[in-house]
Figure (spheres, chains in turn orange, purple):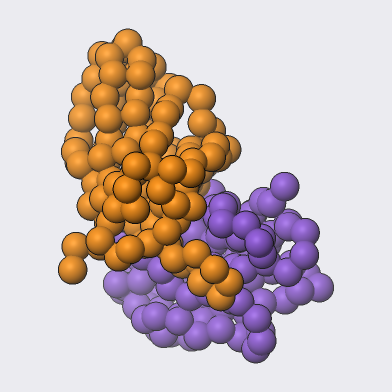
Length: 114
Length: 113
């Protein structure tokens, strides 16, 4: 019963490098999302998806791309990393429909951009 | 646009005393409201949610929250705090008909023995 799995847990990048944060869930959840957590700012939504082939922007989408080719996977891509993207990133999923909505979170990926 | 405010960055209480973590929100219509807890270097864990019905919601680990529509508040409470309750607590709101969950900035709770 893995839940939401994120890899890698830690990553150090140089400015301008690219990388992909992986997220997979085994709960057959339709909704998946990426958040970044910064001190004093809570969690801010980057991108989200309500099903395979459907993605949309959240509050802070600039500098990030996503795709959703399967129900299980929702990778987050940084095409050209910047120091402002140093953060802890969380992937989360949930069922859709009314009377639902509690998110299940991964353990987080700590990214440092030098 | 929806928003969540947690007016206290930190809450300090003695073990055995009541614990309250405050949350107010701004969203059109009747929202879904949530509380999450984050222990050091971990992901967030769901505590409780308000969907509809009784304004007092009971959740995990002895926590409860009271929904007050007139004051647009959803304060988290625990009658008798434990040292193990020390963590970072987040309030979150989701408008009905939307899936985007917006979080407050978080409140660090420290329970001293």
